[in-house]
Length: 354
Image 1 (cartoon, rainbow, N blue to C red):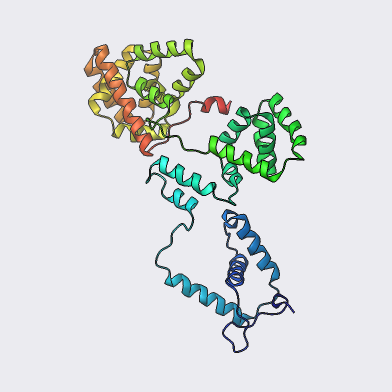
Image 2: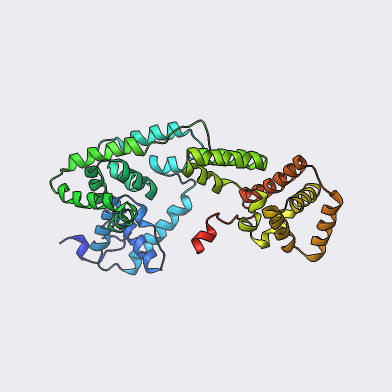
């Protein structure tokens, strides 16, 4: 008779049948589940989940003394642990993110996934949705059909809905041609996709081109910024639009800064810069005047009156000095946002909410 069909005796008893480590682990998992604990079991490799399911399925009745003995042994083991490490290369690389060079991390990851018996599709299916979309857009229809077939149903439906209609239909139709593809061919396709799409690219710059251009134009005088954006519109309208979204200037304050955050921003702005900026904004009019009044409307009447008087004392400031002050104010707000002290609203917030 199989030992899994009878109650398990106490491990320490004179006639006890020794419990395997897997059986003990399954008992601990079942105890935690019974206690209402949510365990991230899906993060474990598939074969480990399968072993666990088999062990849980083999357990029928377990006497209280055995459960107590296993739980005590588990607690003692936890007390004896002095250090916990990731336990595998992939988890180790995740924990070392930012500590080792991307090139070395990529090399180690490639070595791990190229080992005999390692499924390359595990790495592919962990890719971000945008990266999956890029593969489906760039690769052949046949490769796209294989990838779509490997995705979980819910995720396959998600990415299919984001693809252009004609391409989505062609990939869906091509799925019918995957019936006769052998496991080796699917594995080779996975290895090729890992080589092409799962490698970390080492670049000379830590920020994307849009962010770099946006940062430069943030600190540029308005005439220069407007001229550059007009030129970008003519050469690459999509890039120009993305750059505009990354720019934050004094004029953007009413649409990007929450009224409740204005007092926080003012505490970090040099008072002379703020007075000069307000004076220049009032004199310039338009969007700058609207931004200046938005700032004053978000603070106490006493403080607003004091700032108006300080701006009036500056008189009509030189355009160059006014531009410097406006940039100083917007730079202080951006610094707070980068530090997480405030959260800027998305430039598309109004469009999204419409």
